[in-house]
Image 1: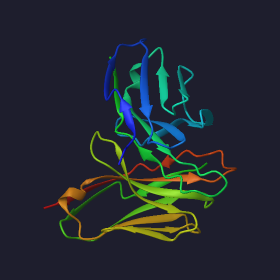
Image 2: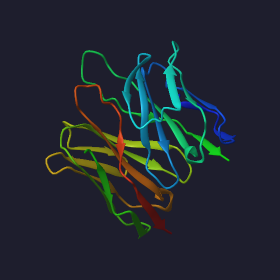
Image 3: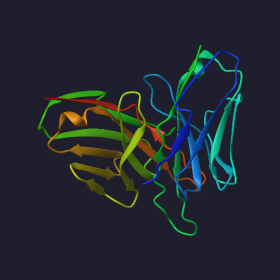
Image 4: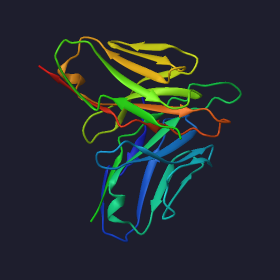
Length: 117
Length: 115
């Protein structure tokens, strides 16, 4: 079965540089989520999109932005990178059934490991 | 504030033992609860999802229960194997107006199954 695809899997950047992470959700899933997991920490929610519109926002720095495109893939753009941005960035997707209660199970991608030097 | 807590933080058991991982959460108005497995430096694998209306879910040697009134969920692993060694994360989605769909994670339980 198709899973969530994230690219790149690993990324090394210098401080103050810019990074773009990509996420391709499971086919037919309409909701995408971004999470950040620092070393030894639990995943923290950043932002989510439903049908290409931002649906929820967590502790996402102003230096970060994200969007969901017409083909439902999403990109997380990170500017002015700081050492503290080094983390695993996960994308997850789910299907929200309209008009009735749905399971909304979130399926996670393998993550992008960002290292800021 | 909505929080998820997992106890114990780490657990070491001999192979073959049955074990229970605990998850507690503030505020019983949850939408659903997911249990995940994470291997070191790897992604999150969804193990079980329990809807707020359900009391338990089973998959193979795994059984997850939910008691909303007491704010608790347990993950039961039967006949543990060394391959079960990983960090197990509990994550809760609360239900407020349908707009909040984020998962809030616990800090996880690091499980080591000794051969």
